Every structure is written in structure tokens, then in C-alpha cells.
Image (cartoon, rainbow, N blue to C red; front, side):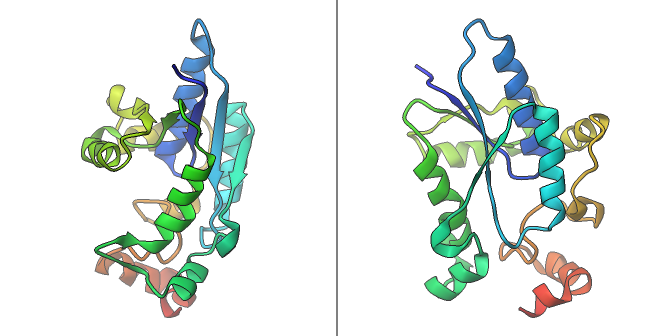
Length: 199
């Protein structure tokens, strides 16, 4: 039934480990499937993400397929300016247009898709499946009961330096100035990235 495996690598530790585990499991399978590692490029991510992606690409042994929503140049600010909407009850406009739409354009019927949902995020898995019941999801980290701290440790054990946003104390490796962040997050952005805070 499966036609290929698509691993969505977001430059976070969890998606890196999910990708590596899926690659290794597929390589050991009796009938391995074609496998793609896709990265959606976003302009406002920390520049160190490119270094992390290159390190992970070597670890995976599989080349990254770089995707971008060209209508917005991969920029959250172009989304905000064009759509006149940042985030609210309808979610974050940048997530929908820069990530979800790109994924939907790339996916094919029969794809088995891998995301970096950790063992603590079964609720996110359930919500994703409720909203995307056509997607065949492989929640490999949940299956293996690997949490976020496990993923951070596994990346470091592989000899890969974690992305700069983790080193700065952020829990996630989102865009600099993520509109989904709370007051504590924005107070930290104000100190670490004053230009992004001001914008």
C-alpha cells in the first residue's frame, strides 16, 4: 500500500531523530521503499539551521529535498503583509501557507509520512490525524516512546552540534520571532534578537 516514505525534517532535534530512525528501519525492511527527506526552507529561521541541516544530511546518508513556498519567498513577514493576518483562532497564517500548503503540494497518495512528534505529544498526533485523515502517519518517536530529551541526547551522541536556538535556551527551533510564542518567549526574543522583536 505504501509507495514511498516522506520524512519531514524541520531542523529540530525530534524531526532529525525521527528521520534517522525511519531511514534505518526502512533500510532493514524486507522490501524497502523509496524514501525522501524533505525540508521546508523558511527565511526567518536561524542561519545556523543550514549548518545543522548539512550535518544531519551526512548523518542520514540521504540528500535533503529543499522545498519553499515561492509565492511568499518562504518568509513569514511576506505572509503577514500579503494576508493581513498573523495568528488567531484560525491558527498561524505562516504555518498554513509556508508549511502545510507546501507539504500538501508535495505529498502523494500512499505516502507514509514521518514527523517529529515525540512521546509526550500523542495529543498532537491525534489532532493532526483528525485534521488530516487522508495522511498516512508513521509516529515513530511515539512508537518507540522517545521524548524530547531523548532526541536531544541522540543528536549529541551522533556528534552533531545542536542548532543555535537550543543553545540559546529556546525549547523549539522555530522561526526567530514565532507568532505562536507566549510572553516569556517574547521577553527572551526582545533580549536575544531585538530587531526581530521590533519588527
